[in-house]
Image 1 (tube, rainbow, N blue to C red):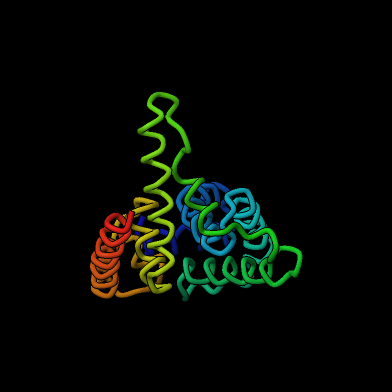
Image 2 (cartoon, rainbow, N blue to C red):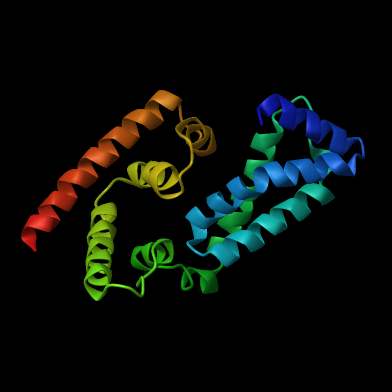
Length: 188
């Protein structure tokens, strides 16, 4: 859904149309959860933060200026909520390590072939080490496009990047990962 349609739905919700809110929630929730996950590395917390964001939107929709982008207003509320969550000292201890994050993305065993399971675990460990060697922007772009299977144009909008910048960053991230993984493969 394009930004113009999202802004139109937001204006309708501002005018009291509850169905437009449902459409906004359906359209934007997945992206909000993915953003919160990047901050927290925990899917449950990401879903909770997204729910809190929608509650804030509902209670403060009168503060929304229909002359401005609803998506940007929403993302601003969401990012602030994620950052506030991370600032709490107790939460900092809950953040998953990159290895735990990778374990969530790929099952540890297939239950069929022990050799295949071992190879999968070894590759996942190498990928985890390789990802840690990428720059933060390369990691974020690679995660959006290759791990979360987001389209490149959508990922560029989501990350607030120019499309060409995203493509370049993704190209260099993939190239660097290939070199690192080859080196790790040869070292074993």
